[in-house]
Structure formats: structure tokens, C-alpha cells
Image 1 (cartoon, rainbow, N blue to C red):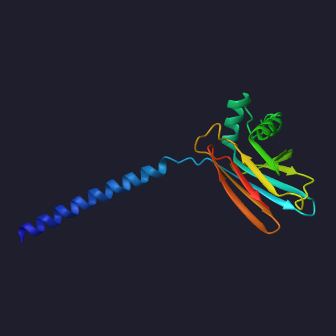
Image 2 (image 1 turned 90 degrees about the vertical axis):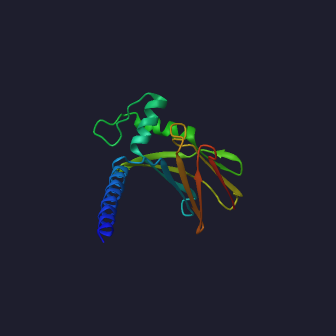
Image 3 (image 1 turned 60 degrees about the vertical axis):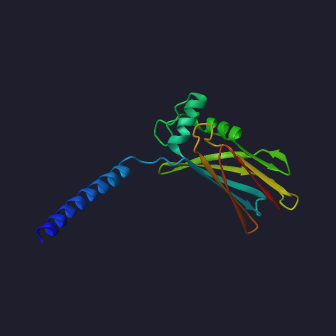
Length: 180
């Protein structure tokens, strides 16, 4: 009987130590934040405007970092001290990293502006004068932030005539194609 009590007490002590160790490891895992590198781009075709209306959501700190490393500017986005040339360089960056082709022909889109939502910058683009009746394929190439972050994932949603197609684009696979 004495041995059973001894083993029971030792078993409780071991379980408490294991539980404490588990809780300590668990709490440490929440103090070191894991950074996700992702952008989300929505392309919606407006039949009324004959245009693709495009919004691209990017984390502000990631965009600031790429603008500084690529162009040497401190954009200070979403602050009172935001650089007056920030939009110009965001537009320039998009023009080098985001491309749309219709039937294997590159097309130009317009950078309309941006706004902020918490820690995200939403960039507004438009691909005007598109008659989808004549288009057989759309290709989207999205390399936003892949030059800076190897783990970067760019999710692209394309919606037209009630259909929706989504891509997850990465550095090694940065193009998605739709056949209409």
C-alpha cells in the first residue's frame, strides 16, 4: 500500500511538471509572432464600365520595406509624415511587378490611388475599355513583394459574369491564366 501511494504521488508530480513544461512552451509560442507574407488582389469585371476594377491589399510595413530597399525612399505610409512621392513609387512598383495580358497581349492599367485600413494599404487599379466578348484568355502575373520575401504569397481572385477563379501565386509560380 505504501508503494502505491508513493507511485501515485510521484506520478502526480511528474504530470504537474509535464503540464507546466507544456504550458510554458505554449505560452512562448504566442509571444513570438509568426509573420505571414500575403497580399490579396480582387479583379472584378464591371459590364457597365467595360472595365476590370482591381483592388490589391498589402501590409503597410511590407510595402514600406520594399519601397525603401528598391528605391531608397522612406514612405512613412499612413502617417502625417507620408512622403509626397509615395504614390508615384507605389505606381512604379506595381508597373514592374503586376501585369495583365489579354489574349497574350500586355495591357496597361491605371493606378487610381490608395487608402488605408488598419495595417493594410488598399491600392486601386483599373483596366479600362475591355470588351470580354472578344477576349479568349486572361493572364495575371503578380510578383508583388516576392523580390523581398521568399515566402510571399499573392492571392488573386478574378470575377466576371458570375464566375470566379482564384490563384495563389508565389515566386516560382507567379502567373495564373483563365481561358474564357
